[in-house]
Length: 162
Image (cartoon, rainbow, N blue to C red; front, side):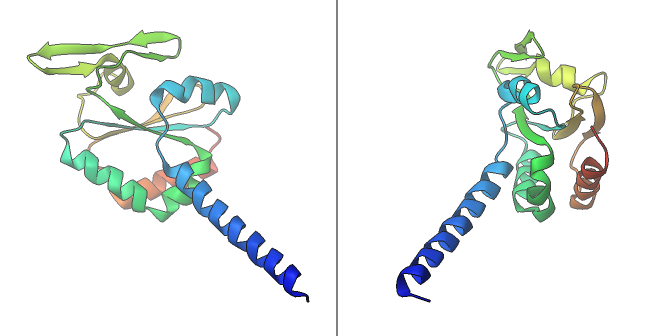
């Protein structure tokens, strides 16, 4: 085999390896809640939402666990992953409706979308919500989701047509 061919093969293998790393990293990056409607319109799949706040240390811990979870990364192409700040002051259009931040006191409040997604349950941080491709809640868990339960949820995503 000639030197030129070996160089070409080496370059192709290097580039494909780099692309694999870039693609797998991109899939684990959270999707913005504002993009969910258009994403579902183009490619319907479940939406896994982590409701959190900036001050919640358990929320930050969950986010770190997700980034380190190998199964989460492997299966991230099966769903859209969203981290939503339940105290965001941004007005958000979701399912053709506008949701806004609602103050409840001096410098405190909750976003209407967080309340809507949480339903009648007491809002806890973090809260995990799984929506099917038709925006129906199929799973809700208030509080820290242990790694084993997160992996069970990921296994369910693979087996069920949501």
